[in-house]
Length: 539
Image (cartoon, rainbow, N blue to C red):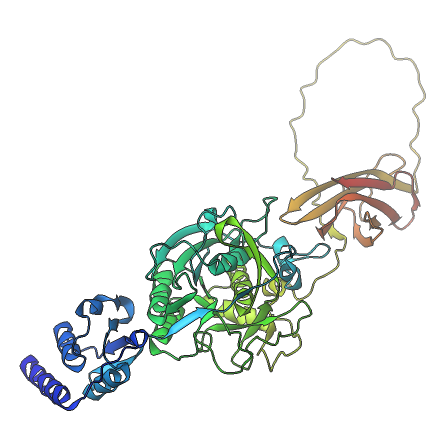
């Protein structure tokens, strides 16, 4: 059987060898091909096929195999690539053959003076006054985000500790970022946060995989990118960020993307900066979260690609982030919008609400804010981190009563009586306890805890009558005034110990918070307001 197969292959090769007129060319950049042979074609037959169809091809390059995809990258100096492609297709022995096209970064350098990370506030990652995603989640070291780009500045103070693995798929000598683009993207995703220095990445407790797939000029072959996708997947990435792309469709790139998706990886890619509705790859592939850009006013910049194939948008203008050589830079482009989406995807993974990548993708899409252009320029809208973590709006902090358990009575042993001589008692009248119908605040305790980027305030109120007896089931109403005069109100009922606790979450401002017990209601009692105020200071 194998002999017959070899004979038939040989016949086809002879036919092609004598009937194909291959023209030499000096266009060396066009001479990289990606070939996937049919599974039954043996390795030695593959070399023989290429030797006859493309005489003079560099045989050592057939070893440049994307192993998990069974795709070969070959180099064909001095031959016309289009003729070789045609000849290989005519053999019937390949699944596909295509040029090894090039992709490029899709971000541009802009003003260096902007130091405010406005995108974090627009997407409700952070907030100075209301609840934000960071109040709920800042990331998890079990979540890895692969940045496939120009590399990362591996010595940058904000990035060095975040990188847990690296690989270089380009023809450059190092995985270090000599361009700056990859470092900028990485900072948006996972720059060290809460360290009183520089900036903070969206998922700053997540970790980074540095896959260099673009050279030091910001461009790279599809084969480099496909290899990077497979490596990132096998290295445990939960999110792959590709702030890059090209106009050429590619089966190789699609196979790599599908490999990642089939291994439960969220794949995020930039939609491109040509102001066009024409698909850009890999963002244009199904299953990829393609990302357009919005500005500070939630409007699409003129240069952002658009259309119903662009799933969501992210902040993409004047984005301040880390840069090469330990620096910082402001840049713009869908390259900058893409890591916002990747960072939020990593937050969703970290928060634990989603069991798989399909859930993460659906959550990102379904919780996006419907900004201008939603449904036409972007299919779903601009990403919202707080919504993606399960909060449907940004609520004003309110005072919430905290249930306080009744104390448990524990019996003790009866003491053994002892006889102690005493003097004859003098007759002293015993005071008679009178019923009291006045109740008051016996005590108020106050405390706070810091939760990431906000505070939780807790006040505990004890209600007693004039004889010191705790009052059960009294309704206590309170008001808390912030340092800026904002008032929060709430009410709750006391337990059998006379206690009721109140808490306020998502507090962002330091200063004095004044709690006032405004009323205590219980049938048959009146309220004495003495001691009804407590001040809590947050330094």
